[in-house]
Length: 636
Image 1: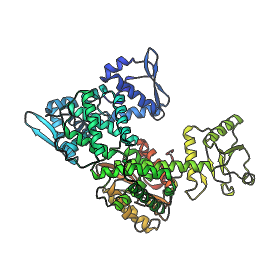
Image 2: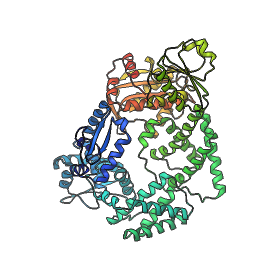
Image 3: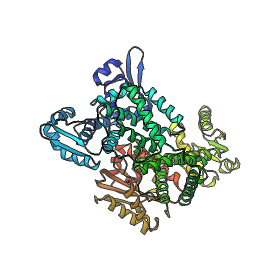
Image 4: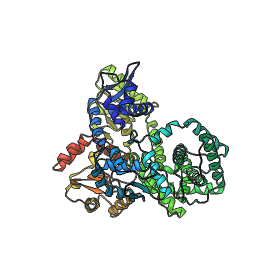
């Protein structure tokens, strides 16, 4: 069962008891409570809330029928285990948890397909496993199993089993084992051991160590030991810490843990901690290096990262253990990577550039994974959020122009005052531009049409009634006003970057060739620099910018456009690049310093990729005008 199966068991009228849910779904009560918590956390997005009626059970409170039915439709397609890709994913998930051969009939029964269907899937499954450096061993009358380097198998287990929310009811052994562990005791003991040695770790690293220990306990309980790990030298403090942890684990859980597990745990601890014990001179050298790299980035992107002391401290705390992980060829998996790279493409690009300069300065040959860069990007995102707040604090006087009733205007004033607590917020229904200019406001928020060109202050137009989502939008528009070439803001910033000159409907099935054609158009029209194509291809070859539902947003390694614009290519037939489907290509060409505009584009593409119906409507466009009309319907 999957989390979405829970929704199929619930309805708005008849409450369902927890006991009935456990019986019907064949999962634990704890799992169901976690699913309910996850769904209620995103209730606004899902269109419903799961409500517990005392002594009666659970019911659905549907407040947005359209979003609710859309989620049900999407869940139906996701849950279809008859889909080959789903079967292959489950095979990997299942076999990573087995220590011996599994018969084909047993696998077929688990997937609920015929044995012949499973046999037909095996060649493709073997290709998928080989890409992970894992081999599939077949043996007559015994079945199949996965074989390979123990370290690689362990990393795959963490990524595809521990990091997966799928198929939890199909394989209960691991999860039953985890549920019996006393998490609080494990967390407090690790925290105590780290504090005793004055070793600091980030929350992400701490959680990662906990997950590693859980996997270790499960493996050794199944007598699935690491046999051929070649230990690399680490600081003795981590060897001692690993030894103390293993002794405590052995006594607490009454389990045998071999010596090579101690060595492997020591390398994991060394790669995931902040190494505060490094000499002061070395720390100062790295601080200078970080400042130097940030100044270079500031010059390339017209930013102020080098002035942010909080960012520098966070980067030092992050980069020291990251470099250690590189040296030991270890990486952290990032379950949020797709979200970060697609919705925060601006900071992901900066993080990518930072790591390039870092590796170049330290002469590191190992390349960072996309997951690691995603974690680093979050630090830069924090800087941008702080910059946004500073910009909001500089708004000292706001004038609301509206012809709404007094009660509605009063409510609007209160919401704007909450958004800008350091501002004086006034309201009037006067539309005369000369009078408005005399008020010397820093920002005008209006529900009525004004003579935009005659007003000095930036103007933001809003609806008569605004909701919480609208407030976030207003906040972003206030920030954005300094980064685009006009001060009159409506909700169509990104579509204004589209143009008929840079729009095409293509029959070409090669993803990179489509990019080349559009890039050449932009360079020929002088809106892009001569090196635009090479910078875009360099970015794609490092990490592709193909996101979800066929949407791609390629861009250069640096922002150096002559004119801000986005080229749009609609593919008549979706193509595949690096295993990902592409239907629409948005080739982003943004000027130096336009990071907030870049973020606005990321938000727009994220909104589009979350709406498959809108994607299909865009793909049906026969010309630019029709596509542009569809693009205006995407509310960000």
